Amino acid sequence: MKELQVGIVGLGWVAGAHIETITAVNGARVAAVCTRKPLTEKDIAAQYGIQAKVYHDYAEMLADPGLDMVSICTPNDLHPAQTIAAANAGKHIYLEKPIAVTYADAKAMRAAIRQAGVKVCVGFECRFSKQFTMTKSIIDQGLLGELHYAEVDYYHGIGPWYGQIEWNVRKDCGGSALLSGGCHALDILLMAMGGEVEEVASYGARSRAGYFAGYEYDPTSVTILKFKNGKVGKTAACIDCIQPYYFHVHLVGSKGSLLDNKLYSEHIAGLNKERWSVLETALVDSGEVLDHPYRPQFQAFVDSIHQGTTMPLTDFETAFATHRVIYAADRAAAEGRPVKLAELD
Image (tube, rainbow, N blue to C red; front, top):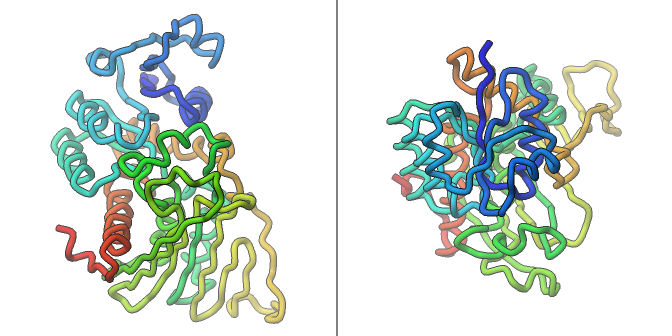
């Protein structure tokens, strides 16, 4: 099997996780990097332990006929143009979340990707974690019955202790509490609930702590989702909290409930309804990208390219649907009214 030759654009925090992961998967290798930093191939070898060609011009890297895939690890506002350029160059794409800050940009990206016929994987890697692999298995086996309510919340204080704060506070780059990080939680909620969202309402707030004073948007939001099948859900996105990272999950169904890694189900005889049964798994409990499940996601993406199949769970169309709900929620918060998804053409 020919190894896919991968080019990394952007050498910030998340790129280190991508390089480490691609080095570990089967069927791919990091062959090039593109950075504004004055780094040489010797520097890259010393810092990352790989032999890779160094580009300082993205268009020049895309023109390399030997590259099969591009991994986009740049700030959010650069994602649309870089994705469209990569698609037009015929490269497969791993794209960090969010795909774009605006709905118009996301639609332009989708059009370019569809026209080029390239494969795209989006950085909703939490779907590949042990916790949410377990969660999906529990739902699929019917242990919760028919879900009618879910709340999945994202608490991760992104302050000056994170290098990304410089661009994350900007509305044209960070975008919103959901786009910055809460998208992971909303994406898991949509995976769990299934069905189509009909309408959303969303409200914002902000901390008075000085750490977060630079945010140009409300770093806390709460979004209520109404599904066409009558289900409802809630996602809180709080990136101005002062607390440990917490990815909160509570799923409520006709036969039981799941609270993070704790379960009660009528389908399991002998459980004590007065106490939760703890399921031992690895929780998503850190904002450190090296702790996130990139390896199984990247392996699935590489395999899908080699096999000519659709990327499971985190393909572009699935991620686009999640982002469409986010854009509706951000519009609802900005305009102070519920927004129907049908309003987004």
